[in-house]
Amino acid sequence: LSATGPDKLQAMLQVNYLAGMELARSVTRRDLFSEEGGAVVLISAVYGLIGKPGQIAYSGSKGAVLAAARAMAIELARRNIRVNVLSPGMVRTEMVEKAIAGLSTRQIQALKDAHPLGFGSPDDVAHAAAFLLSPHSNWITGAA
Image 1 (cartoon, rainbow, N blue to C red):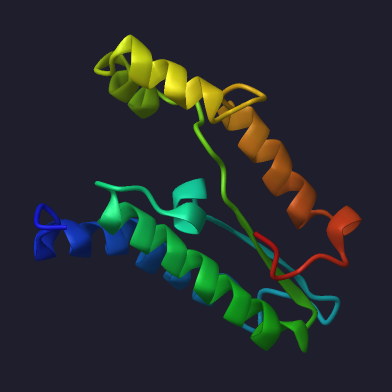
Image 2 (image 1 turned 90 degrees about the vertical axis):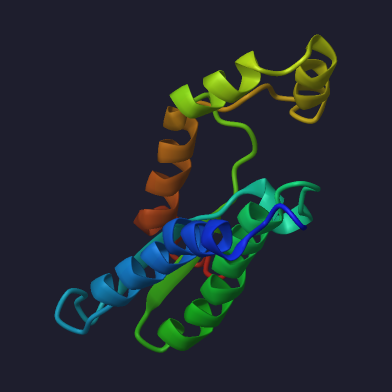
């Protein structure tokens, strides 16, 4: 907690929460969706659900996305706009690979143990988002 200064907290909120809220606000303007409605998918993370010691700013900013999406789902349902959140675990990206490179064998094994299906890929996240944006998920809103 003491390592989470105001600048770091503000940066995390800007990237992980405020940018997504602004995007959602922009795309839900009345002139972008037909009367048939549409869908919004926001990205959080598993640490927004469970928290992680040493990651207070990150976990808090991702948790804020979840809370806002639940409220948005209720507010926008009357316009037939669905709002859902993806909360992936470890996804193999360049940033994650760099972070893993600095971990001990024990730490890497702990991460693997926490992901029984293995680490995800960007395509895994993209396919889940595509489903939530598709008509096949027309009865899903407010889910994380």
